[in-house]
Image (cartoon, rainbow, N blue to C red; front, side, top):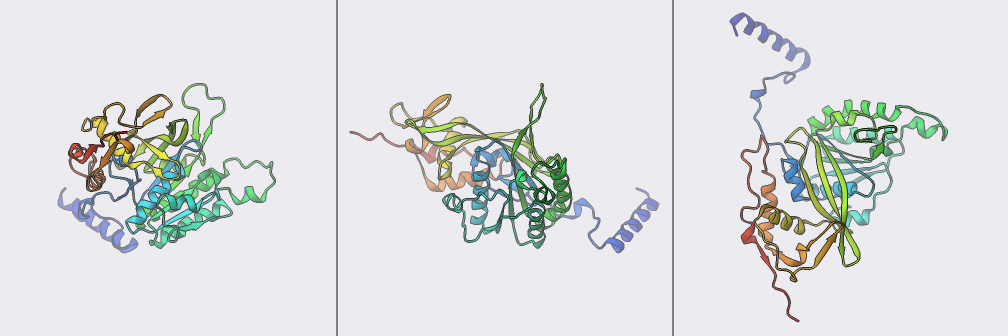
Length: 352
């Protein structure tokens, strides 16, 4: 760049800073590059699939899926992990269906969790905006977008038509929230439901509620599905769950993870670690007859929790290593299972 262009650029930058304040414009290289901070999801496989060790802070996240697929359970696991790290969390319960007893079983400190049950969609989003702008809340969960009913719809008659009202509400709110979320470093998670498009003959007929604004503003979108049951004998004790990262602005997208959500206890972390070890070839399945069989709808496999024992210190190291999985700003990928062979030992079958 010649001297005249440099002088013109310097004058323009000075004028911008005088008019809009220092920091309104800067060179990208002036700021130190830091790794993207993240909050663990409670699932080792999902943390690896997300590429940065969890959900990114200072971003908007959308979690959607069918009914009873584990959406709220996953967000409660995120809250539990965030609280263990000393973070402040809030839960905007637009569905008025949050069970504090279940949340406590998943490890959530209900005494420290901020909960709001708003009457209208506008009230819910205003509460979110105030919490985010305060800069004192690290994680805000909205459950769910479909339950954010506009005030005009609540005050109107039951059969009145309100075309596009909720979509306009979400679009306006996200325009305000996005900048505040980045500035405060708050992670804003929206739970969303699935609807079916009418008259779609080809392609996927499924769509999410609230219009397209949330799809654009979200940095991460997770599609969570129940793919089977976990059974002990004839009794169902949990769900086999698959989560696909359908959008990811902070790491490569379209990865997926499978794990078990046990009824009343949440994600089965022990079984997940063993499954990852078997998948990577670092762990061999125990001999037939030494493990309790858990039946999924299409297969039977050994129950890891009753067949194997993990030394706790190795389990903690594996969780720590998942935070440095393959991502452009995390350096070279690490092999989280490199030392799992020595960390996992099969139990000897009991003699009768």
